[in-house]
Length: 324
Image (spheres, rainbow, N blue to C red):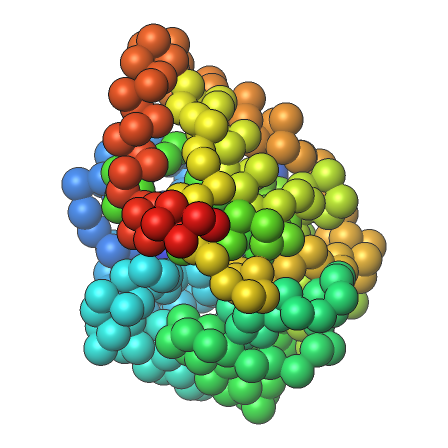
């Protein structure tokens, strides 16, 4: 099957691209051109057709859809960048998706859509008993979650053969340069379930051909071996690269633990797609391998590195002042 993959060189995109190839699909990789994207594309198999374009440009999308049988739609802007560029985020996340749906409906061939949604559609739900089930009412509390709800509704109303995959947190193996304060935005004791990028890619790739997944919304997360508290996960990641432990006072405080999501019911998605093969041990080992010789160097400077990361918390001073 010929599959168009948008956001093909992102965190989940690269894993999905490789998984699609393993599943035997012919892949058209659609991505916004950048120096990083060019470097990643240079390492791809020559059998993968790379199309440089912008999902907000109908003409470039139309050209990429020619002769395609299915599309896996991953392209989007995620938090915290949604809040920093709200107009652009809506054009990319909502307007471009609605345009894509219309173009697929009009296409003579591209009728199968697998869409990347998010647990963000549920908002703050940690006041309920886990696990988080796919049939729970949506109640997003941020713009990103609201974007996904709009797209889900439009997809369900379309004539396409669709599947909606609501992702848990997919933590990248390669920690790109970003504002370290982002990691402190959630409560230390929040229930947290993550998903290894490679397992996310497998879920999307296998959904393309899965007839039983058509017309379904599925929770996609790592399973019991990927469940813990948020601070336990962050400290495990930091320790893997030589940083930590991070004090509890650095994390956001709330009467009800704050996190967009929870431990997740993935019984149906795992039965259909058989994608859960990795847990925390694999995540940490892959991160160590990615950091290579840099990790021992960071470990030598552990107190300084820990201080640098912790001081970026916007909650640390106030929490310590209040004794929490």
